[in-house]
Length: 110
Length: 111
Image (cartoon, rainbow over all chains, first blue to last red; front, side, top):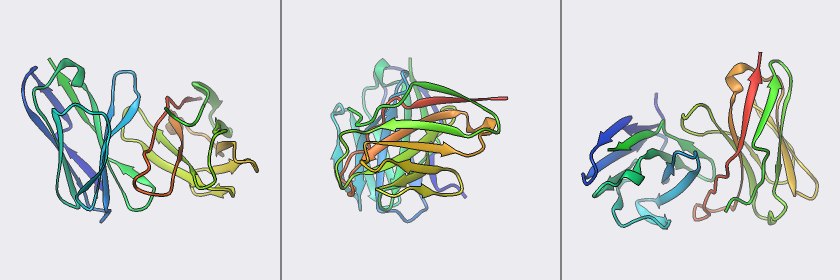
């Protein structure tokens, strides 16, 4: 049973396109997150939602828009993709302080 | 910026204990020390956390100094599958506190 799942695993797309990444957790957690890990392997938080409410919004371009339709889902929509958006995007969830991460979505923008 | 400093890399012989140090000299009284690891670009995996006391679970032990300015993660019998990047993180008590990952320590377990 996968606790935190993401789709797709891999995403290859052209510059300028719009794409979405989906995340689902079956742990019953209240809080969900999106992280970006770039080519230098630094893992940086982008957004955090608690009970569908945005609570952390780092300095991320407006082209990135998270959406939480319910507590179990946090999707990430990216408009007008740029080369610099190429990275691995990780979703995570937590109840309390311990975070559980998904397997990642590897995004390559050509 | 991360509130912790870790050596960039370490080696450990298979079957030996791996001791991974972490400095967090600016930690405040209500902040926890957390350890995660990331195996070959998989999602980070929670290992252990503590506030003041030493902690042990099935994966590792966490030793926190009395002044709380540093800690050591101990993998008692390292295996090849423990080769990973290990992140030491200091964080507050609420969901609103950001988790900031530093570059971590790349541990190589050698046969």
